[in-house]
Length: 277
Image: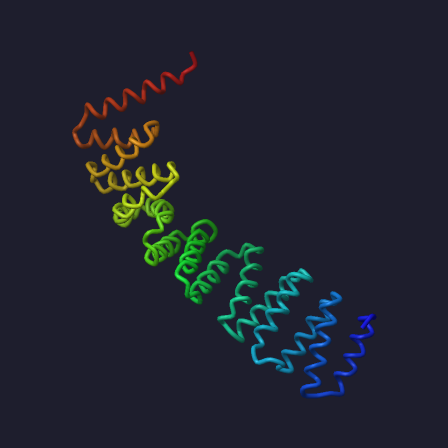
């Protein structure tokens, strides 16, 4: 087959007169020649012929291969999407088709659809680590792209339920709880957060967690507990002005006026020092 165009024409003519195993053999030969020489439309047409001839029972494999060719070789995302969807109609659990469809929807920024596919892939995964990773990815998509904080919270909570020691999930979940003013649920993270703080290497992340927990307990009128979180935060980062303010107001509500005034004086002196001389 030094001349692939002639070869493809001859193979097409040969296909018209044969059936059964020989027909299948020639179909596969057409595919081989078309792919080898970059005749992508011919390769896709051949895959469609193979699907029609039921060359294999797992037609989702052929639909997915067609989708890959449309997407990667022809840049036709509409046809690729249709091929991947056809694969999923044949087998709703076919991960390569899900991955191909997911790639297209990411490119098109169809975030609600992306979120649904990530959740669908998670449901098909048996590895706990992979399931957590997919739930975290879905949570971030719900938060940042789909603008669905309630869904993001549910996904982060479900991820932590699988592996409670994943301390890197505490801060984003706390942020969502605070933004939604779900104080009691945020308070429930307190024990888990404080136990996991030592394993969090990022100093800024530890500070934010303690600051959020202080704020949460202020909102719940538990100023004594809020003070403990703020004091712990300041012991690690004495220059955190927002934490100092939170602690001063909590002291004041507890009747510790002198302690509150000390903080306000220090903050005022810092502001004076910043003024141009």
